[in-house]
Length: 294
Image (cartoon, rainbow, N blue to C red):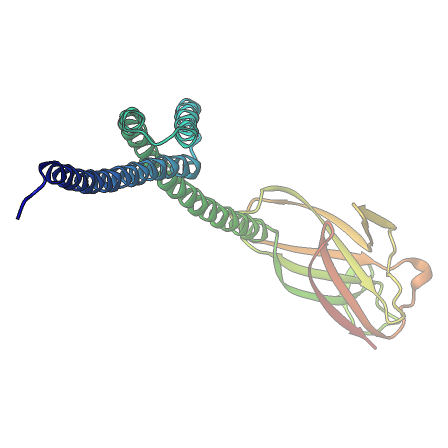
């Protein structure tokens, strides 16, 4: 068989072209896949950087601090981070771009580490201050309660002393007397009695202020009229119609006191019945007794 050399050469060339096209196609497809993978990698890296920047901004928003200097630094760092994030979102994914922003992210993280460490320290200091403030507040409340208790005890003590310092009396009794040739003679006959003697004992009391004490006697007859009316004595908003007044010099010791109350002429003879006798120191009643005249 005779082979045409020219036909053989054509076949060889065509075969070589087919192989070259196939190799080029495989290479192109492989290169395309590599480019797509690289682009996807860059996009993923970009999203990771964006995510970290967004988290940093969120952390800035979550921080609340009263220190003006640190607050200003936080606000400044937040602005820089937001600018970086906005710039990254606007730019195309590129290896050089990502490298640049990764360096910025690294620098921001380094600054934030120091800044948030300071914030944490201030938080710890504030917590300790709050604890101390709470302890001081509780101690103050406790002290106020104790002071209030002491004040109440002092008030009660003062009241007790005031009550204990008041003039007191006991052993009250009264008798009717008639005058017989200048002498006194006891009697319970109303038509004969001209005076009523009132006796009592001022008790010993070292708390009572010593000195002159004004004592008032009030005698009411069975018709509820004051015997031997001497008028009224006023004590602030109160008043007392009295039958007799006596001033005694009290020296904190026991004193026996007797007072004669002479009936007025127009009251004699006295009416029969029960006579009620009350003894007062100023406006305070020390005690009472009664005497019955027939």
